[in-house]
Length: 250
Image (tube, rainbow, N blue to C red; front, side, top):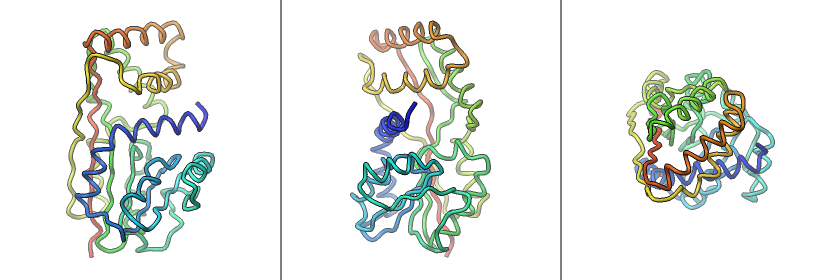
């Protein structure tokens, strides 16, 4: 997948959590004077929307240079940097809020990133981990598609993802020293009589992830079964997705 395809994918993921983000931003008190940093901003989908909440342009960092360049172009802003979340290029006590979206499942040493997050947050500032999935608790129906979910989880593990990132999130915030930690699970509701708008995007990702685990013929058969299950109303696909937030002590 090229980076423009990744931008489409990140846009799909952002749509999944849009209502949750709106709730969380209100819950933690983001306002027009908030200085905000997104870690792992990708192509800037979520960083760019923060102008709706704060008059101060949000900053975004990502470790992949090409994605940062797309973020700058699509947002028309220069508040993006190619940088590592383990060593952030900001002074201590710089931000009121740090946010992350589908990031912690990819971190080998999440406590180190959380420690660095504490450093760049102002006293009393808040980290908001907006969405971290728990693939080991994934639910699929009908039964003939159970294997598809299992293969995707296996592929993510092979790529270095932590399939239990969601359930471990709040514990890690406590371990890192955050206070007033709260967590929850994103709500989920969907139609059952037609494929979702993101069906093609999802299968583009599946074909990318599963190329080493299944033949093109097997993937085409699974895609057909998946589509048929959506069309006949039997398809259930749910990955519990956790959020958590906590403060830096004063």
